[in-house]
Each structure stands twice: as structure tokens, then as C-alpha cells.
Picture 1 (cartoon, rainbow, N blue to C red):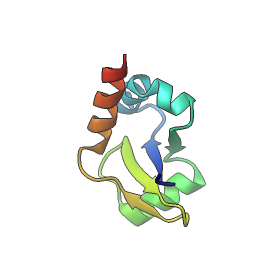
Picture 2: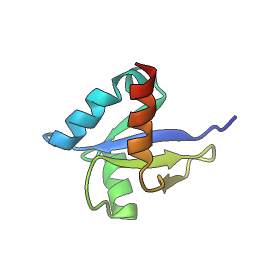
Picture 3: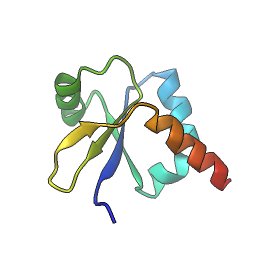
Length: 86
């Protein structure tokens, strides 16, 4: 089993972020996905490292604490998986 943690980088006032958070409500609430506000210190650091073109953005924190970008389409896959559970 992977110790990777999926993180959703969001921004206050972002309509797309609000919609994605609504669709991923359960995994956000139960800790399967962690939200990182881009305005936070960690969010600013990640934005500096990855130069996000838009939010919401997806990053993965591995077991050593290092972050990497999610693969293209991973947020869509997470949403689809969650919708299939409903």
C-alpha cells in the first residue's frame, strides 16, 4: 500500500475550487485528500516550486515528505471515482 498523500491546492474565491471541493467532499472530510490553500505558507512554497497555471491543482506528498505534481487528469479521475461510489 502506498503512503502517498493526495493534496488539492485551492484558492479562496476560486469558483472551480469550490466546485471540485463539493465533488470531493467525502475524501476531503475523511482525510483521503488534503486541502492546501495556495495562500498558506505551504501553498506559496508549492506554487513557487511548481508554478501552477491554475487552481485547483493536484500534488502528491510521498512518504519522504517530497511533493510532486499529479499526473494530468488525476483530479478528474478522483471526481469520477467519487461519483461512481454515490
